[in-house]
Length: 474
Image 1 (tube, helix red, strand yellow):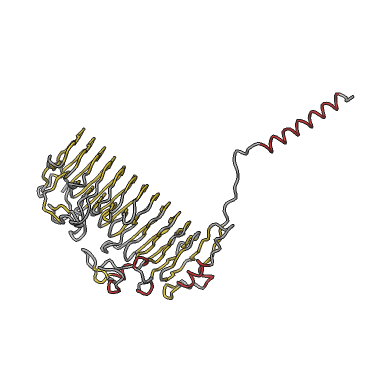
Image 2: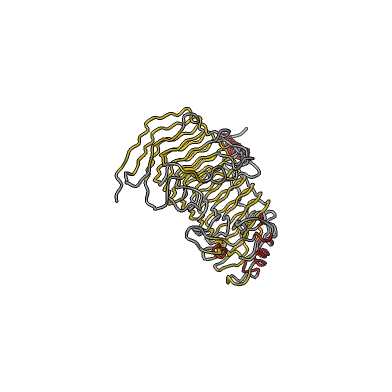
């Protein structure tokens, strides 16, 4: 027979055993996983000099190739200490991130032999069919674009071209700066991309791309030095970027496949061409694009859609955008339009694409020209919405106005008096809370707020639309 004290001790032991078993069998609410290990290699340990005179290509590529990327190593950072590293094309492999430190510059070569034989692989930094790659570090990638200028011109520089090689044609035969082709999980952040000879950052057939805190600078008078070209790629996010360049700043294109799920937000842009331009390469669909909280300063054109090759555009929203556009020169596409939406076919053999479900919400613009919305007979603009917009029209440059710009292709430059919104071939256009102001400057040639032919424009809804002159300060 057990004593009462012994019974109490036994009960306590059983209770503790039960609690222990329960804690072991319970499902944990949070699992602490170790961070995937990473390693770092310095290019100087592989012989890079970093004096900006001698080529460091072999040392840089050796560092990349030496990265241990098999488990358990997840990411290999290839580090560039302060210095100037002159290089021909370097090739990234999976799980490699270039860490170009503050005070370091990766400098692209300017000789034809610095690049592969194939024109479509002319990049200073190139990643092809790899995953989990990127560039960061606070430093600079520089393409020495000004060394490709044959003759400087304040209107538009004349560029050196390598078209004599037969690899490509025309004056656009120059190397790009950074390219990711057929890649998955691309990340470019905290880096400056400077002076591309041609396009700067090129994203081609990629999935899951994240670009943030990137500064892009290109010479303001050099043609084709686009900021970011997103081509046939899906799930792309661009945020907190600062782009100041001569040609299109952010340019989605479709050459070989559709482009879905692109978001651009919290960016600052200045360009001598279009700040944002869909096309003109547009053979396939654009769908699910959002552009939000963007400042566009002193650009030749603000928001542009140039659909020329039969691809259809749908479900695109521009919101919370401040725009300032001005005339520069007729040699650049654009006539200072804050918003430009067109679907005319590139040439007589081109198919007509369409644009539908396009929204402009909370837009403020000060421009030297009006909005241009031009569909085509077989490529209507449908279900457009202008909501909460303030449009101010004035002239402060001496360039000649009175032209509508259909380029590339189509009708070219056409004489047309200025209007607040020019409309052609539209089915369904809703205008709500739009305030349009006109300068009263005596030399202005403003015509009317809304310019359209009822035979091609149908189902317009105007709610709280206001148009008036304002006194311009001399």
